[in-house]
Length: 186
Image (cartoon, rainbow, N blue to C red; front, top):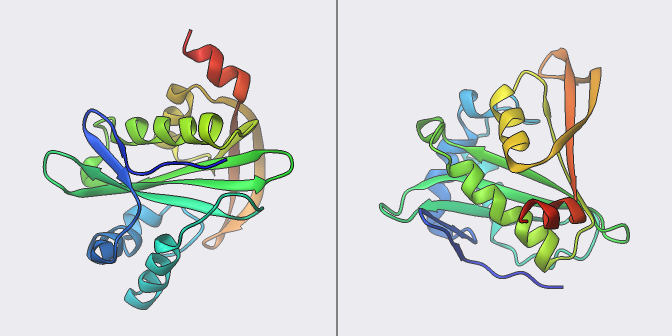
């Protein structure tokens, strides 16, 4: 299975990262507001450079642990507004995970939904995934609402299962199966 980038939507271009995206990625990954519910703390410029290097690699998406992270660009202005990621959890079982990180200046405009729906399409239709999940800190209500709008259903609420940034936090898990993806278009 293969996937194709870039993807053009009505308002966005979802594409591979470029070296020139460093400043935008730095703004995203070094912001305490952005990283509040993520598994990492705000990153240093050196850490962002490492992060960008990983995003520049051509990932075949055929092995456990591989991830495709795509830049989300506002077509009208060329601005980097965020990123979407599709992880391979288990290649043999054809399971994955979706994630998204958007700059706060662009929250509430539907960009994350518009880009994420394309990544779900890539996962199910181009990569042949059977199941895609989304995991998040239960306090991240915006992301939980987005996963619901995308058609994922909440499957789990794990109570204080992760010690993150100095405190125990709850985790929510949402999921969608390939046949649910197909049925949602009918």
